[in-house]
Length: 152
Image (cartoon, rainbow, N blue to C red; front, side, top):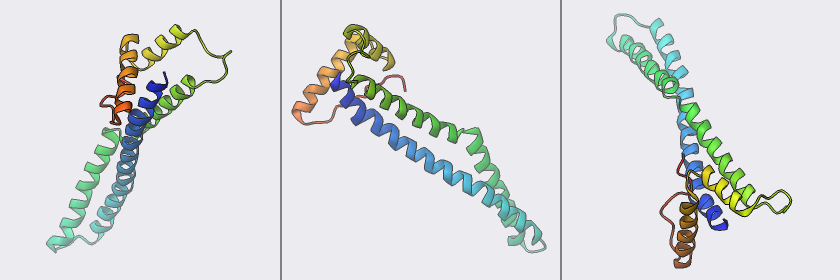
């Protein structure tokens, strides 16, 4: 089980943290640029007149604001960030469960192994294969090429 924890730490948690940070940056950018473009369109429409560029700026800003808001809300960018953060918390809980020191709180070994395999979306034999593969890769000094979780 310690090998599975190492795979979760090295591959799964690292990947979900990276993707969560990326989704957060995108969400922040969209959350700022949507209202900013709307404001530019509103202020620019006051100055719209005979000049071609004074009419073009509010129209383009309004169109861009519509696209940005549609992508932000329709694409559920905030929800994607929350999903990545939730998965990272799930892997942290899984790690704490495996490394539980209190023997009274622990379950039967086979039952515990089956529970961990199901939580990771694997069969028990696949979980054992992952642990042995991780150990052999670690002995060679190279990085394992698969993730512990097959669900997310």
